[in-house]
Structures are given as C-alpha cells and as structure tokens.
Length: 488
Image (tube, rainbow, N blue to C red; front, side, top):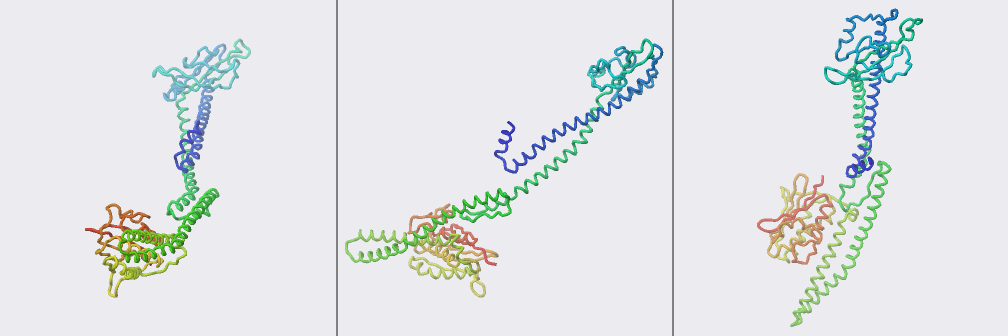
C-alpha cells in the first residue's frame, strides 16, 4: 500500500523530488523511531533517578521506626514530616504498616503493592507505578512507589515472624518533566543532524543530476535541423548509454534527411536540362505560331505551356539553391570577410536590366561618409549572400508592378548591418507578413513564383547568424529587412 502511494506521489514529479522522497522518508521514519527510543530511554533513566531517591527515603524512614519489646517506637518528629511534605509540586507520600496492611504511620490513601511475590525479599525495595486520588483537584495523581519489607521485633520472641512494610511514593510530574528534558536535549541534536543530512543529500542529488541538466541544455537549445551527435564524455555510465542511444537515433534521422536532400538535389539537376529545352522549344513555337494567321487558340496554349515550363525551371533552380543553404552544404563552403554595402550595390546594378524590363524603378542607397559609401563588413559565404539579395530584390520586382519603385538601402549600427528592400507596390494582406518566409507560401496568385524565394532568404540569413523581417509601408508597399551581425 505504501509503495503504491509513493509511486502515485512520484508519478508526476521530477526525478530530483522522487530521489529526495525516497532518501528522506527513511530518515524521517528513523528519526521518529529514534525519538520514541530516546523518550523510553530518558524515561528509564528518570525512573532510575527517582527510584534511587525513593530507596534512600524508604530506608531513612525505616530507621525512624524501631522495635521496642512487643511494639514499635516511632521517632518521627513533626518537623521531619513537614520537611517531607513541604514541596506541593513534588510531594513525598509515605506509609508504614505492620503486618503489611495494618496502618501505623503516614498516608492512608497509598495503595498496597500488587505485583509483589508472596514471600518478598527483605531489605530490597520493590518499585511500581500507582495512582492516588487528589481531593483538591478531584482527579488522580500518578505516583512512583518504593515498597521495602523489613523484620522487626526479637528474633527469639513471639513476634519473630512479624514484618514491617515501608512505602514511599513520589509524584510522577517531576519524573515526566525530567524525561521531557532529556528527550529535548537528545532529540534537538538529532533534528539538527537530520536537517544537515537533508541539506547534504539535496546537494548530493543536485550534483548527481547535474549531467542530466547538461544533457538537457545540449538538446533543448538546438534547432530542429541540428542533428549533430551529443557529446557527454564525463557523464555517468547510464547517461552515456542514453546519449549513445540518442546519437544513434539522430544518425538515423540524419541519414533519412540526407537521402531526401540528395533525392531533391538529384531530381532538380536531372530536371534542369529538359526544362530548359522545353522552355526554349516553347519560345520557338510561340514565334512560329505568331507568324501563322488565325491561330489565337494555339498561341494561348503555347503561352501557358511556356509559363508552366518557366515556373518549373524557376522551382528547380530554387530547390537547388535551397539545397545549397542547408548546414551540410554550408560546411563545405568557406566564409570570408566581405563588404555588404558593395555586394548590395553590385547585385542591384546587375538587376537593373530586369527591372527595366518589368517597368520598375530600381535604385540603391548607401550610408555615405566623406570617402563614399560606408562599408559594412560581415563574415559569410559570398555566393549565398548574393543569392539571398537576388531573391529578395527579384521578389520585389515580380510583385511590385509596373511603374513601382524599389529601393535597396544599406545601413548599420554598432554591431549590425541592415539591408532594407522597400517598394511602393500593392503590398500584402495585413497580418500575413509573418508567413512570407514560410516555404511554399504565396501571398498572391499572380506571377510565376513558387513560394521558395523568401524562404531561401530566411534560411541563408539565419545561417549567417542574422534575422529577417517584413513590415508594411504607408500608404502602400512592403519593406523587407535583412539584419546580419558585423564582423569584429
């Protein structure tokens, strides 16, 4: 039953609490058992002390009763009686009877011993607990009694077999108070020792579970695509086994992910050539169909085929770019220190012909100083950063619309470089800015995009330790910000 209760109690708690419970609960049981044993031991020692005083008092009282002929001479002055009964909190009661049961001197209420053998040993006191009525309070007082049997009279006379019983009793209040004091003096150090042991046990559990905390820190801060093995060499054997099992799982997942990436990359490579050929053939067919009179339906079908081929080719190129942005691919590409301002200006200049073809005014603004544009030095892969800029500017050119203006601006502060691409086109639906960087999400159905361009931008920027954001522009338009950390 106790095991079930403990199992239920520890089912939803942490491992640290369960260990504390299982380690401290036996200590608590032992402490309670020790307290009970200490109380019994203290009571025993208190009884021994009281019994010793009662034995001395009974022998002293017996010496005051002397045999004289056939009677007894009681040499017990009133002053001595007053001394014995002076302390009301620790009253000493006494009775002398002969033969036992025939009252001679003392307190009549003191009961006779009940557990004494039929032929008691003479001169050796018997001790027992008893009760006596208290007429003042109307209750009973617990007593500790010493009974001493003695012979009196002439050994050769008629009364040679007569016996005298001397009983001396003391209230149990002082004895219990002494037992409580002894208990307090012994249990208090035990309690302090238990508190100290609890602190030591808690510290030991914390130190013992520290490898689990390190393992948690190694796992919980990872990104979903971070499948590197866990390194936990200094951990206990049990945790090393757990880490090894997790590493095997991560290795299996990584193998599956790599297989999928290889499939996408290989498929994209295989599709590039036939899609490029299909696109070229549809362009030639459109030119030939334009020379044929009265074939508008054929031209429309060929135009749709050409758009589909262009979109498929664009999707394949984006998939290849996305494959290059994965961590495994980036590991094989070296990072260099480059000027982001210069890169942005060059990419903008390269895309001016495409902007003119789309009817969009494309321009560049840099943070200039006395010597020209202020350089923004970052560490990164030039090919990937250029791909990110091309994608975000191309996205603006595609959806801003003819007659729109697209501005690329480079700026920076103490530790960050900012690239802002702002347009005054129709923008996006309010509230959808946060989803623009999701894979295969398209804010509009116009154009031949595939929903991967901005996702690639986000992937590349985050791989370089930066972040991206999208904010609407008033009265209309959209601004995309690429924020990268500056190189030292």
